[in-house]
Image 1 (tube, one colour):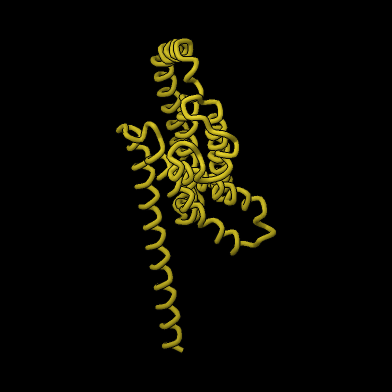
Image 2 (cartoon, helix red, strand yellow; image 1 turned 120 degrees about the vertical axis):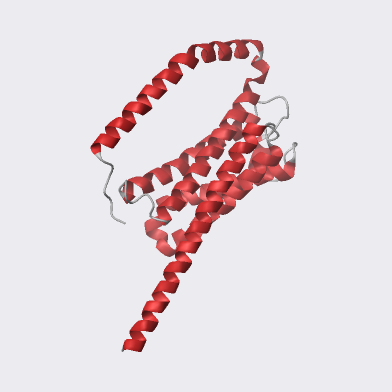
Length: 234
């Protein structure tokens, strides 16, 4: 699939609608939201670290899920018609890096949260924390796996394409363990909106993974049939 790009009129209309919608939403909600945040911060200063931990947890999960979805879209070549592959690959890498950074902030804020005290040793060593050690440990494993995957981007030329691809499969395990971590250790995991985030991200990843596998199997069968036909005709 070759890069064709979007029609200029489509781009202009899309950006115009996006800016109009964003301006309307911000104009209607921003003043009230800012006042509510200020009031909440003033009234519950002792819980700011707890709120921050939850916020960065969801932001990190969304970034990691976005990186996995983007990577699957890259392998299926569905994005090649509207964007240059180097650009989409860079965005895939950047999403993974942002997710890793947000996860690191999420972990560090746990040391400031007085609700359940975590030491730095608890953060570094999986499955030894004071709160739901198994499920929190899954989150720690997900972080280390994501760290390996992100680091592989920067040594890709040295380790070779094959080794880099093998390391990249750890992304799926990182996504799985981070999802289990969020569902079982998150204080918001019982709410409908939080479960919708986890289930929506999981559904997107599973769908694209199945599509990618189906596409790969179909391509291999086509190659086998072509090779058999060539041998027969020869």
